[in-house]
Length: 191
Length: 197
Image (cartoon, rainbow over all chains, first blue to last red; front, top):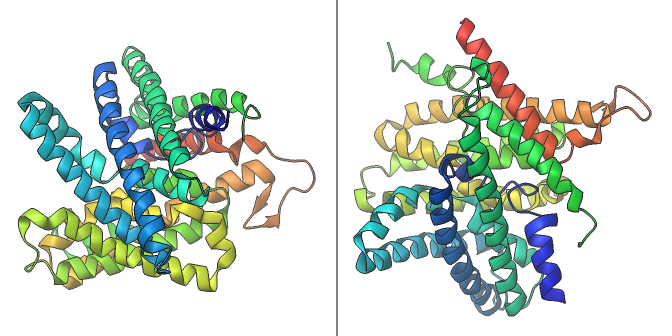
């Protein structure tokens, strides 16, 4: 039941994109079409899950016992950058077209609030390892959900005849605001 | 005179405002501007990190190898973010509680990383510092503006001082949707200004 509540909370109630604003930038840039949104989410989910497991071990085995918590930003950054690089090598050895796609997303992965943000959020919540993994997976799911909805919205927005100064980012932001308003309807289901 | 010092200093204010024109650093801008003072605090913290990282990157630009540029820059930025976090925790504990996880997330701010990659790694120390001052000022002003508007619309206060007493205010503007909508209209207004000039 706890796991289920964590899932509902991370996907709907405290959605990382719409209420915590993590990864807003990458969603606006990447999910312009549905299939690129799916691919990007898959990579984010992979890195997020692996990194949060590693970060859990760093936090509990290295930083906490030795009182080095103030170094967490530095430690996590080094880990995430390394992981993004490593995923690139892995994809390169698997297939060329995967690697080409991955290279496009790489700047969005390295300079992305989502992965670091989820790690920091779950540290503040004092989860144990299994809850950590559930939280990371469901956060990735919530990210994917919003990114899919946004890809749909952006495809529709292209068909609109808008005033010149509202085109592009302004209308996307306002659409995001309306979507966030819709997600506020879930408040109260879980903490 | 495209690269004159004056131009470097002032281009971040309006013409290339990092938040309202280049749309960099949107994540902290949306998350922390629930009130004017929070926006100002976040802006100043980002400004500090930007200035320090730009100067350091520019000093080390001949030492850092081309291939290790991005990780090296990230580590430099992470160092200054850690310093900023400890300073804020020591001197402004209230602000530290309000900003929460968004202080460590300054590391991932595209503005700082972008300036390090695009500007500081190819220019002299003095020019990089000027660039950081201008861009940081533009970002801080934009964040404060966003925070003041949201605080005023949401609670009827500016910087904590009551302007409209009582039940005035649409709470929506302090919550998440208000952040998106306010920033959307601000950018639209900026587009109009840019077209006129």
